[in-house]
Image (tube, rainbow over all chains, first blue to last red; front, top):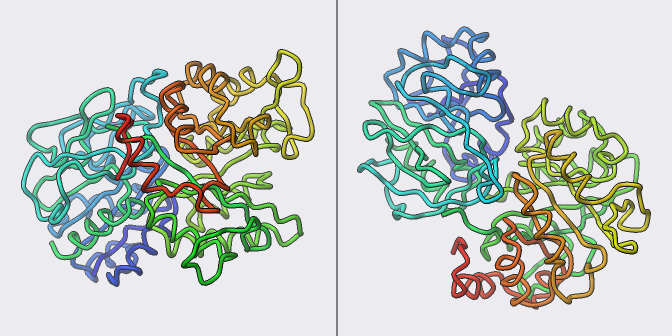
Length: 196
Length: 251
């Protein structure tokens, strides 16, 4: 069963609705003790990465999250929290990935936020993207991106520059897009995660 | 590459769609959730719900609508109509809305844009602008295009961007309902001037109008209502034509 880390950064209604539709069981993690109840975790998040990190720290869950050995998926800002640093609020983050979250350079050709459906391309084999073709579209809405890194980038995407649409290290996964809003392939991804 | 988005717009009153919708296989053409589901299956990239409920129960009916949509639909959606304060936006965010669209309330109180962006992030804040030409000027209008304001359209849009709008939904009231094509001239001026996404609205009547608006203005998305609702344009056909014109779409 998936434990959703609750720390007050953004609404999770759409995520739980997607899990309900897919028949994937889940519960909420509010305390360190709750972590024991689940075999995998999702860290959701929207809004400001620095503010989200402060909220996460205030829950007291941070040391335990850093030590997690079970599959853990960060979504959007929840993924950015896994990196070491964000330009948003000049924030120090969890540091589970030694890479940075940077702001897109905006122009009238590359609008920011990067909003809409963009293609993603696998850089590595991974069960998270089972049955999802290379070049599939996912729904993004973000102004900050995780830099491309050969060691950690699981999926790449292109918007003015190449960036990490997904990252992976050991049991930690992140996706910048919103699988709960990304049509059928987004649902496939959530189902895949529930089986990793 | 990032795709151009196709967005059907649904008008909703008291939890029911207002304009007639002509899908053959619908059980209930007035049910916004069933319509939304249908559009998502057709390949719509996003949906906009415009709530025109005028009763005191408005916020409650909007929240119920948003929850019902978020439970069933796996694509993003925006809700607009009568959002005046942070508490309205907060209730809609928690009910599962991806974005909110603000129109009159932002013109009357521009600082609301700053407050919403700060509270929820710019990605949540769509500023809807209804514009109409008066003489040689493009002027912001309220109340569905009936009430002119003092604001020049581009100047207002730049202020909204500056204050924290994450997206602009620009409706030309001169073109709306004409089915003669989008206002490509104004859309290009606006699209070239801002660094946030622009949704074109008003005037869609045929598939070539969508090709035109993307080729001539490079806007990020195009919105329409009746051509989709009455089945005059089917989204898969529209996207096939856009793709054959080398316009990036999600198929």
